[in-house]
Image (cartoon, rainbow, N blue to C red; front, side):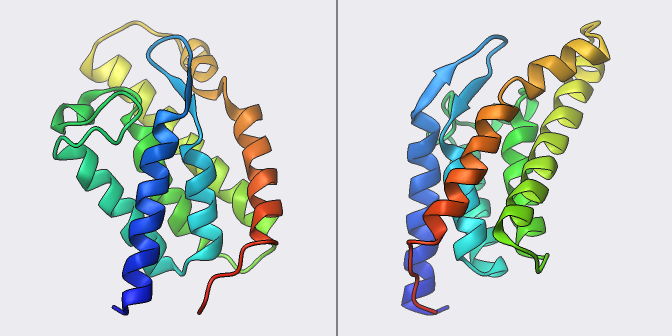
Length: 168
């Protein structure tokens, strides 16, 4: 890897971590954060390898105990029902960098992947691991309560990327 690539990966990893601390607490241990904005920017500005590396670095940092996630960090995060959203960042990046469409289409595809992963993991953990009799509709409401603000972040990212230049 070139020094420039390592720098971009480190920068976006740090921005995603900082975005996790800019949050509005919601119910059931969920937060609205600015992580998604920085994930979107990484997906729009970096190539697939670098964007995925930045997300993998972020996840590893959090899982080894560095408090980069919205509620801290640590290996125990894997059993939190909301971990699927963090994994969803990586899936979203992969999808965004795989399609050759407009930035708006890329962000919407990423948003759907992000929320899809988050919902499936949340529902599965609540029902199978925690054995909580949460209904499908209640899980859906819990998981999708921030989709409108996250959609707005998709629009913001599309606008910001028009003004940001990254050297190839």
